Length: 64
Image (cartoon, rainbow, N blue to C red; front, side, top):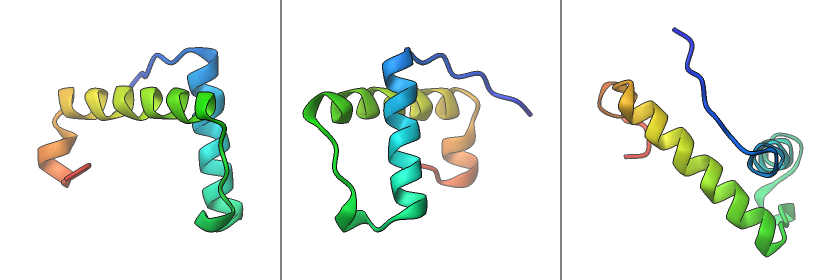
């Protein structure tokens, strides 16, 4: 199954920045500006909403 998530450029960049930091570094090294944090939270909310709409929240326990 493929899901399409519509993000603004800023939201996509913030989410990419977060995943790279968490993949290549540790959480204590993870630093974002307030603006990046806002964009990242917007992107995560869109992802959560999309997963919920497709039944993933209940099926897989996402964001429980």
